[in-house]
Amino acid sequence: MNGAADTTPFLGDYDGSRRNNFTALRIAFAWLVLFGHSFPITGHGELNPLRDFFEKSTWIGEIAVSGFFAISGFLVAASFVRRGLVDYCISRVLRIYPALIVCVCLTVLVLGSWLTTLDRSAYFSDPRTWNYFWNTTALFPMSFRLPGVFDSLPRQGVNGSLWTLPVEVSCYLLLMVVGATGLLRWRTLANLTAVALVLFSLSYFGDIPLVGRIEKWAQPCVYFLLGVTFYINRTSVPLSLPLAIVAGALAYAALGEPWFAYVFPPAFVYLIFFAAYRSPFIDLDRWLGDPSYGIYIYAWPVQQVIANFFPEQGPYFNTGLATIVVVSLALLSWHFLEKPALGLKRRWLKTSPEG
Image (cartoon, rainbow, N blue to C red; front, side):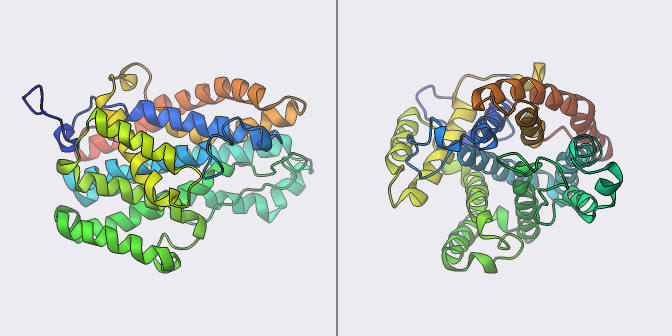
């Protein structure tokens, strides 16, 4: 950290610091996805109270997912630069797959077999049931339907939130390829590559390896790239309150404007890192852990179950009950699965934990 009290700190001054609010931000983003989904899941999408505020430029779930990707890009770029290729790959696998595999298996074997309107034999003989297990790879676009499950609900998908995981894994793979060339250590070349990638994607996103397969993937990829770019330029990014106010004003002004896509993302990402390092520190890791991933992957199926058994109830009931159930599941997932899985990496590579 800078020694002078009147010196504005830079993002790079916090390199390696664990006094940050990334866990709190991720939990908040995960819950906002839950809250946002409660409206379409209960068939009340038009009643979302934040819809008018965002002037149809975006919605709360999209903002939350974008925040996830910006934080992810920043942290995994730091992981690669500080720890190298092997640690990076093991960390990513242990962070994504144990919880995902358990979630998919519970969805198919417990939730699906319990709630399907088909005979159990018909359910388990249907190819769609077994195709759903491909979701455990997070390498292909996700399957969202199980035979006879939630067919009568406003949204029939068993877990609509999983669509982002192949995007994230693809971003990890692309960053791994780029990082293996050493490009992340050369700031000028890395910045030129990032600019070239953005310009190229404006017209030819589908031609970008790994991430260009589906047009919907473009937005989270942009935020992931912004996170990586902020890390690369961390020594030149001041974290000051006046700049945060300007960023907030720009983000608000961009809502509903044709230039939203060019102004809102960098302004929003700046606010994320300001909040992570300059707002009062909340040490959630110490007394709660990091249930954000569990909240994200379990929220949709739990909300669907609630909508199935309480079809007359609206989004706020769905949000409240789902929050209790999902946070409980997420805490179990973190303490008994995700954290022990990350502990394997620490034993294998003799490193400190990293999310």
